[in-house]
Length: 219
Length: 103
View 1 (cartoon, helix red, strand yellow):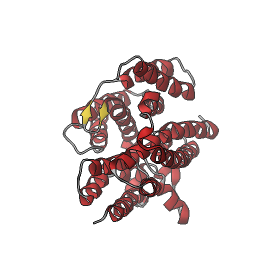
View 2 (cartoon, rainbow over the protein chains, first blue to last red):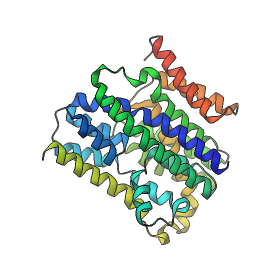
View 3 (cartoon, rainbow over the protein chains, first blue to last red):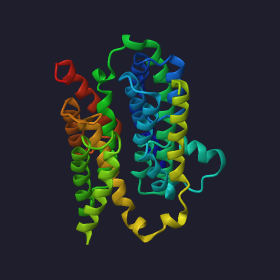
């Protein structure tokens, strides 16, 4: 698939994921943040899972320190994305490095890593990263202003759009037996580990288990 | 710690984690083990994302309308339906089922 196709795919992932920011904005205000605080959180932290965790701790009556600790733990997996994306993105210097870091999250990493060619991987990463950033922040503001009056976005099926998009990205990688085994193991391990690990970390541990399984089959 | 300071500190830590990966030395990345397993890590992460976004809510495992939406998406990808149409169809299936009363 070429650069243009990768870019189109990245933008559609970005819009699907970004629109979910409406629910973040609404929940943030309900949890007790001001509209401007909700917007600052989306502009600066820009990691949907960590942001939801942060306001979740707040809504549950937790302390600010607990909110910082849990939301940071949820974001630990992001440290692996920059390294995995290195063949596509490097060299990164100056403001591009900081911009790339800021838009590094599940959606942009998936859109980049799903590509077999470096140029289309880079196009996919940037298209998804920038489009999620723009739609997520506009949606946060809209949701925060509308507050509790807004219906839940899951009524529109928006929470089903992102996993469908990730499935599409995964699809082209499943030709080899090792990859098929790794995918099945990753799904099983994610579901098994989700109830016992801190939110957001099961997926990362599951990916490591999946690599071991895929390697074992390949030998 | 006030909530404003908390959100600034948490944002700075989130950015630090993201930046960290982009600063990993090239020599580590060219290690044979890393090169050999990079494609499997990608598959593992993508499959993990699909699983966690379809079947979990926070730290709870859930089966709801998202599962039906994902099943429809799988059939459409298998039939080589264009990406954007599949994503829209998945959202429509979940929305439709919820309108009919299935959560």
